[in-house]
Structures are given as C-alpha cells and as structure tokens.
Image 1 (tube, helix red, strand yellow):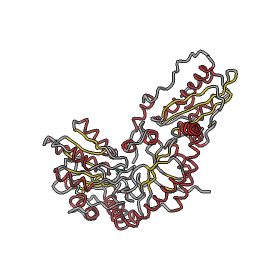
Image 2: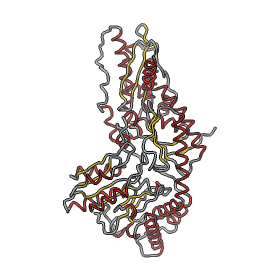
Image 3: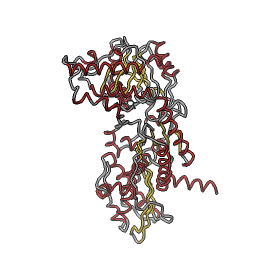
Image 4: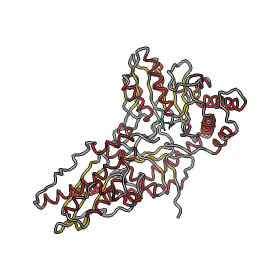
Length: 151
Length: 400
Ligand SMILES: Cc1ncc(COP(=O)(O)O)c(C=O)c1O
C-alpha cells in the first residue's frame, strides 16, 4: 500500500532526533489521533542549516516527517514555507488516501517550528498559521471511507 | 539470510489444512454437479452437503442436522441472525436489540443499520478485562426486546464471555439469544445445548477451513425472516447454489479441530504464555490488554507505550512477522479499536496495541525470534517518539 520511497523513509528515516539548542521547535497533532510530530530547526542567517524530528505515528507519519526535514534543510525560511503537504507527498511518490493527513501534519510541523522561531526572535509573522488545534477530524474525512476493513 | 515467515495472525484467518483441502478436492472437477439436481453428480454433492450438516450439528451439539444452515461467511450468519430475528419480531411490536460494546463489525454495523431503520439498540459495557456482566443483560431486557447477541470469544482480546449464564437469563425471560462463536469454534468447546443459545454463528476460515463459508445454527422452532432470497436451497431459507466444496471443507476442518482440540489448545496456550511472559519481562512499559484467565488460548494483545501500532506492524513485517493492531492507522479509521476503548484504554495506549494470535504453524523458536525482534523494534520506535522523549525528560526532572 505504501510506495517504495515511503517504505525507505520509514525504515531508514533521515534526521531523527533532537537539536539541543534549536532556534525553533514545533509540535503538532495529538496522541488521541495517533500522530504527533515534533520538529526542531537550527536557523542561521535565515537559512535552515539543520532539521530534526521525532514522530509518534504510523509509517506514513514517520516517512513524511523524514521527507519534510530533507526538503527544508539548506533552504531559506521563505523556501521552506513553500514545502506544502503536496510537495512532501509528491517527493514520496504519493500516499494512500487515508494517509494524506500525515503529509498535512508534516507541513504543519514545519510551519509551527518556523512560527516558534519567529516568536523567539521577535520577528513578525506574515503567515496565518496558528497551530493544529487538535483533532477536528477534518484531515481524516477520507479515512471514514475505509473504516473497519479486515477480519 | 533468508527471512523467516512467522504468521501470528491466526485470528484474522488460517490456512486450509492439507487434509481439509483433500476432502474438498473431488467437488471441484469430478463431483461438480449442482446439489439440487437429480442426476448422479448432483446427488453426490447433495449427499456430501448433508453429511457435512450432520457432522457440524454433532460438533456443535445441536439436536438435529436440520438446525444447521450454511451461509457464505460468518458475517452473513451474523447478519441473518440479527436481521432475521428482528424482522420476524417486528410484527409483534418488538424492536429492541441488546448486544455488547465489543462485538465484531459484523454485528456492530448490522445494529447500526437497524438503528437507522428504527430499531433500538443497547450496547452493554464490558469490564476492564473485557467481560460482559450477565446481570447487565438481565437489567437491559425489556418487554419489547427481540434478541440478545453476545459473542462467545472476542477477536481482539480473546475474552471468553459467560455465555451459559447469559443463556439462562434469556431463557428465563423468553428472549432469543444469538452468539457469534466465530472466534471460539475450533479453539474451545462450543455446545449449543450446554450454552443455551438459540442462534450461533461460525466461520470455516478461522479453524483451518476455507474462506467464504459459514454456518448459522438455528434452534428448532425459532423463526427467522430470510435474508437471501432466491431458490429453494437450505430448505427454502437461504437461497444460492450450495458451495459444496466449501461446506465439505468446513465440516472436515471442524471435525479435525474438535478431535485435536486439547492438544492444539495446550500447544498454542503454552506458546502464547511464553511470549507474554518474555515480552512483559524484557520490554518495559508494556500492558497486557484483556484477561489472563478465560481467554482464547492463542490470543495475546499488548500495548507498547509511546509507540504507534502501524509502525510496529510494518517493522515486524520487515522481519517476516505477520501480526495485527488495534491502532486507528491499521484499521483505516480515525479511532482506535472500539474493543480497546471499551475496556477503558486511553487513545494513546490503544494506538500502541499489537495483537498476536498463535496457531498450528508456530513453534518455540518463533517465540524467541518474535521477542528478540520486538525488543529491538520497540526500542527503535521509542527513540523516534516525542512521547517517549517527554516521558524520559519528566523522569529526569522528577529524579532531580
Ligand atoms: C468474532 C467474529 N465474528 C465474525 C467474523 C466474520 O467472519 P467472516 O470473515 O467469515 O465473514 C469474524 C472474523 O472475520 C470474527 O472474528
């Protein structure tokens, strides 16, 4: 059900860990939904020089976190903001419909970490992002379709 | 090194035993006639079906073979029992169904559907181990109760329900009693007379028989409305050309299961207990879900704190170990298993659940390999988990 790329990023996730002296940290999702992503960013002169993550979640959640950190490393903040869930998903050769919300979470984790960076450095935010409020279920409507499958 | 394949999902389905397959074989190519036809290839099919009916009636302790009706699955048997009973009772103004909070979707979704049609459903809670309290059944019975449906053994946590005690209550109140014995049949004794049930479902693929064939026991004198309309098969109660090979396979499989039950149950119980004890002693922050006693012999259900079940399953699969989980991700829904929620687990703990169901093909060395793999994988996933990070930090804080 997962692409080879997803399985690769799940089995060999890039950038797992913490950054002790991170400049921005963002955490999104909640345990109730079964997905939590925490992203750490090291930012120098407006450039993301390092990114690490920790994720509690399914295979797709881990893979999207891993891919998201890969995609934003070395990028400017502006460029990192262009890494949307679609970009992450495409980089992973797609996700099953029920897992699209994981890529949304990855996008939100980047945004939350950047928001934290701005807040810490007294920078204005021109993004509207205010953090995932928890499980509204909005990102999971698709999942309802294949509820209670096997056995 | 070639990766071993260790199948630990016998509650999901089992392979067909070679003896069972041998018994089925003649009915594909040689004895292919329609069991309702009069010529000889059909007659041999008819004879095989009736012999299978007799065997299954005997295996389940039914009074007569005529109380056994073949269906296309356990799900169909469940649907027929509930819908057939409530549609028949509707004329008498009865519209209430009593079931439990931990039934299989075959019952849950049927009840949900019937609720939309105007029936009333009471879902009885279970205790922390996963048992229905027979006293709750008695309290829930109303003058308009059409049927009580409680499963014999739960498919996720293996809890074996007090069916006999519930049967005494339903009988006392003259209410129909259906039991979904799909997980129980073949693993523990199932005797309809002893249990005092009116209706009971089984499914062949759970006891080393073929998929796509089940049966419903209908006590003589119990009237159900038909579910499948068409020809006159199954004495006009369940239309559709008989799945002769499947029916023969189911009877053979159940016969074998009952003949070897003590040995089989003893073997898988030993493997299960060993796996449980090793995992609980070697891996920290693990919870046993479901009961210790009165549990299906092959069922083990554990929650690994701080990690999510689907990740665990994928990594186990990479090691050749096939298991299942009650996490939302693995069921394709937003919520984790309704069974784990019903026994009071938090979402987080339910998301980290793993079900291992042992069977015929498993060995001692599988258990050793499983525990080694689990230890490694759980540790690995925990190093990736922000929940574990929080836990470790909180502990350090507390130690200061
Ligand atoms: C308790 C229970 N009831 C019903 C079913 C449905 O049986 P079937 O797969 O034959 O439709 C299953 C498993 O599939 C089960 O575990």
